[in-house]
Image (cartoon, rainbow over all chains, first blue to last red; front, side, top):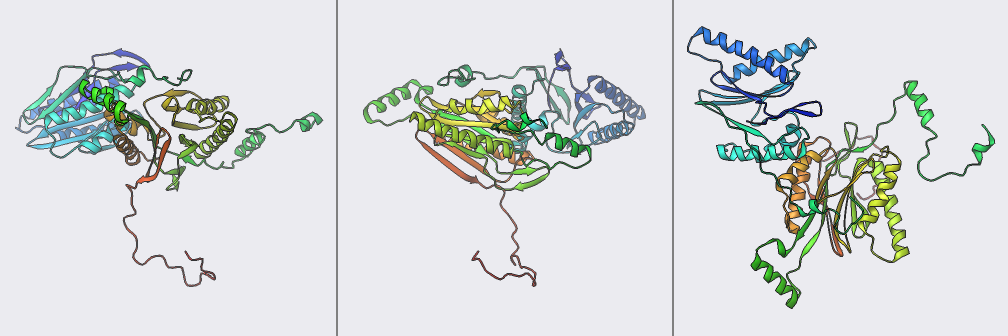
Length: 202
Length: 283
């Protein structure tokens, strides 16, 4: 899972080091876009959920499917009360060898797929993922593919910042990388001197 | 009605006389007809395949052949692409319309937005360019078409919903411009407009590089339009491509048909028995 680390307040870039991906329990990772305060509330609910699950101490732990189902119920019920949690959530994880990736929107629309995106990613990243995702993608290829998507989003989404994190979830657990920047290319000759031969236009 | 109103001669362009009547009808609850929009993906691309972007050795070879044999040409031009779906609200009203409009023998224009607006505006400017060619005797320049397109669009303050990708090759080289409904223009090496512009722009942003050959350019434009066709609901059907180089153009209508009609009933279509078919027109 990849996300950038910016949080805007209207049209001003307020916070530039916000971690929008958090591990949940032993098996899952939650990524969210939308209202940060609602994300913090969701993390509190999930913390309580995992805590109660741990207190049973029965050797079983909540996997990504269960957490996704819980989040769906929470989001849908809030929407029914006309008081939604304004987030688009991505829930991924691995339990007992089974991989899972699902998404929940703020109105409770939920589904499971091989590749998901939130916000502008639906328009800019989904076409790339639909074309280039394959069943047996290696980790390095997957990171390259996500970086390709994040680069296009960086070019074309005004609220994007060039500081991203990649998170990896495997049977062993969750690891979230340190923040890093993507390499961008601005040296097209046509960008440097667009009106060559057409002076006066722009 | 005072007499002075009748004396005004009719001016060209739009007449807004019926607007008050329309407002009155809407107040009374009459539904206005919906526009026939080209919810669209249109793209343009400049390709400039020339020697001096490669290594020193090749540059030497490129220069030499040019001097001795007139070979090793630099090939550059503009490639325009468009899908072929026209929508009226949520209905597809034309499955195979033509969105790449002729402006001049060396200039073509793709249009997105309201279909009537794009057709009318490009027709208007096409005839203005022809008259200008008769006046001057020279090949039309792309910036001429650009100015002729953007002035009326700005004057109508965006009410003429026409978003255009204008491309052509003239004496000064290949040019590609985008024109927004409010009259803003951009000069770019690659451009997309329409509802499928984001899907097509992802392909361009990830795969465009300088020094594309003509075939690579066509491949890239086709991929971008296909991305719009399959990922955007307002675009669909087939891919049209137009390649313009110095002195030559290739209008590849329906260059790719990625949505074939996969099931055709083997029985064909039978008219009900009482249908009166008197003359058979040889279809």
